[in-house]
Image (cartoon, rainbow, N blue to C red; front, top):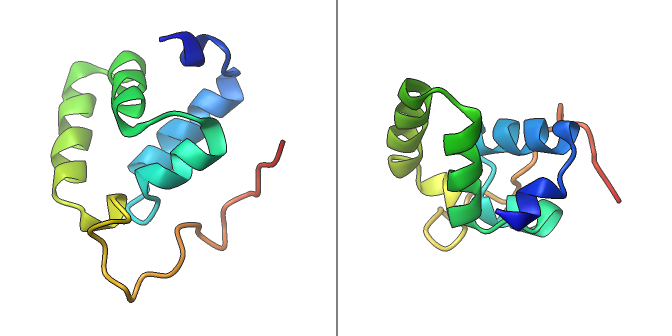
Length: 88
């Protein structure tokens, strides 16, 4: 995964954190870090223990909020007010 090699440890940590957040869609990770959903899944598989990865995948498959195209119109934001703003 070439894009992963260009990411800092802090960026990888933030991507993992965003991937675990229920309200953060994969599209937000793509906008911020340039990783598509499949690349995030590969990163999560590489960064987590197998049991944790399986638990995360099961959790994400049950969340409609992880995909903008299928989430409800009542959810307008993807960022927690507690989240630090990362800009380039």
